[in-house]
Length: 209
Image (cartoon, rainbow, N blue to C red):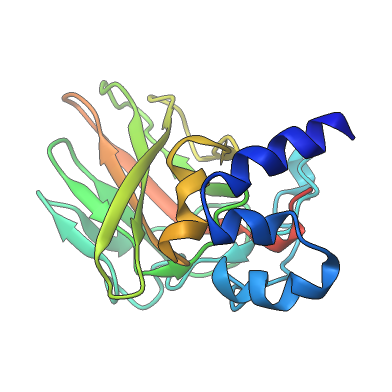
């Protein structure tokens, strides 16, 4: 209980939204509209075979089955044939050679706890991995900031990525800035990248603890 009041005091110091976080349940509707109440609130246990029973939803065109629609691709990044082998979810994936960059379509992601997971392959790659960054956008589609999440280990066959999760840091400011939208940026590091990425999933924030 003491930790709760300390946290509320700190949030209250940030302003009105901080106070709302510590208000009674009657403010839940207002709070939800401020920090992503229109985000998906349920999903499927896609990664249950790997011991992850959290609920995830597929990011917009996260399976690349609509080609590059919604994605921003540069430096040789492209969508081609070939699908991750674990789920019968389509026939395409994202190819990321060295020097490339891919930014996903805008997806609604609340700031409380963002968890991203996907399938990736870098068989025979000699790079240093693929870096995951989230770009946060405000109500006027202006870039507010970014959060660096993880770098996936290079050189392996198709496998689910680790569950990239983050709390704190820039995320704490998002309710104040009104951000409910984000784009997921994938960048291979170093030379010799042979990365393929498929089925980008997001853990809905409403299901976080």
